[in-house]
Image (tube, rainbow, N blue to C red):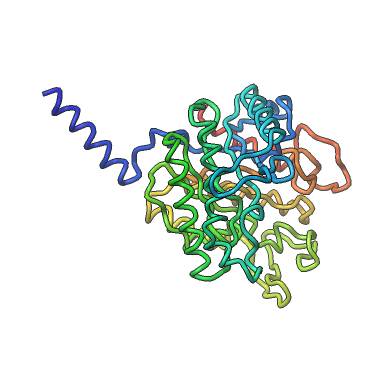
Length: 360
């Protein structure tokens, strides 16, 4: 009888795992709400974020701070000693602040050229380049495979941007599957996070293929439209764009478009379709709106984002905590010249309201 029960339990586990319903992994089934952070932040900084209600941070491994060694290749890849030391210092700070961590490999160009490069497709199909990405993730996973209290996810590549073609998206799907396989060769516990192409824009989720691994979360970034969310950061994205309101969308030729909650719902549809079709867990790895947007527009944009994330059951990480003054929640909602941190702003109070929904 005992053997029959054991077999039955094993069979149920296999069936649940095959449908993506068994999540005995680092991510779990609860929503996660947090923020992006740089590795330079201290335990004191992170404790402030934790006091707001955040449960995790997306730790951005920038190539300037955590570089690969010059000898890294498709057989063996690692970070410099200084890079590892910086990451370990940050992880200790996060542990002290009681925040979980997603390790984010934030250095696409260390492996592949951009989508406009004439060598882009050849690079994506280059076994040495792909192998090097797999090798560094195998190294990371081997190092942290037994850390089950702090790290909740491996974000394998920030904003992948293969050519905007079926071949480009297929190449990224193939690469992502190979990275998952490399990680799983040494670590079956930690959740792998795969972002869609087109710099993580939500529309590219329709070109993403799920991997054959239930312990996976799928991710995108929300800055849509860039003409609003990042207004003033490029000549093509002039200041003064309202939310809700008519915004000219396009690089050179502008198409007047109503940007409002209905626009957001339409932008999110490919992600929602993917979620429902594959019973997938979704994480919004980055989102924000520049605080210089007129008349409280950033607050209203964020409010609609957060309302929809809650409705859809998507985890999220605001971009970013104590990084750029352009979207710092602690800085004034109205006075862009004011660089003093405030205990309360309209955007910060909104974020706290949602962060405090995290499971205690």
